[in-house]
Length: 228
Image 1: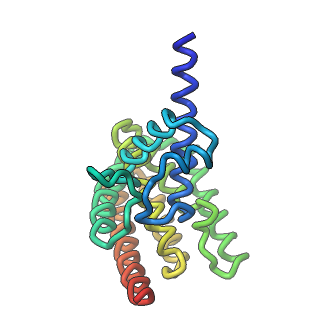
Image 2 (image 1 turned 90 degrees about the vertical axis):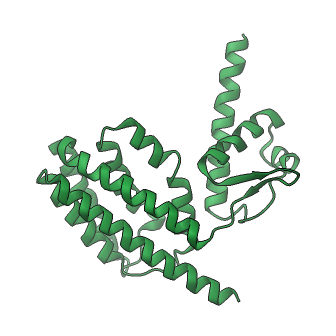
Image 3 (image 1 turned 90 degrees about the horizontal axis):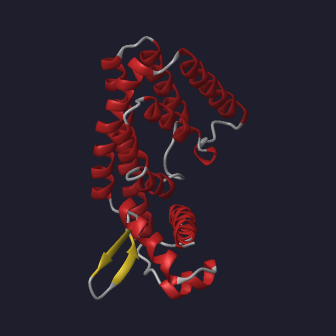
C-alpha cells in the first residue's frame, strides 16, 4: 500500500511540474515572481508535499531559483544567461547531429524530410508566419537529439536545458524574423545527416544555433529598449 501511495505521489508531482513548467514558459507565472506554495496548492487543488517536489524539479530545470530568507522565485531572463544557455546548446546539439549522422535510420531521415515539407507548406499557407506555435522547430531538433542515441546527452538537453530555451524563445517570439532561413538551415543539416557526414552536420547545427543565439540577443536588447 505504501508503495502505491509513493507512486501516486511521484506521478502527481511530475504532472504538477509539467503544468508549472508550461505556465512559466507561457508567461502565466511571470518572470521574477515569488512562488507561493499556499496559493499554488489552492490553485491546482493539491497538497503541499507533491507541490514542493514539483518545485524542486523546476529548480533542476533552471526555471526557479531559491534564496535563503527569500524563498523560491521564477527566474528573471537576462541576456548573459541566454548566451550561456545557447553556448551549451550549441555544443551539445552539434554533438547530437554528428552522432545522428551515424545512427539515424533511413526511415527516420525520410520522416524528417516529410516534416520539413510540412513546415514549408505551413509557411506558404500562412504568409511566412513562424511555426513556433506549432512546436515544429522543437520537433525537428528533438528528433535529431533522440536519434543521437546518447542517453546522457538526451537528458542534458531535453530535461535540463530545453525548458529555459523555450522560455527565451517565447519571450522574444514577436521580435525575430525570417523563418524560411531557419528552414533552409534545417534542410542543410538534414542533408548532411542523410549523407552520413557527421562533421558537416555538427558544423551546420552549431552555426544554426549560433545564429539563433545572435538573433535572440538582438531581440532581447530590442525588448529592453521598448520597456524603458
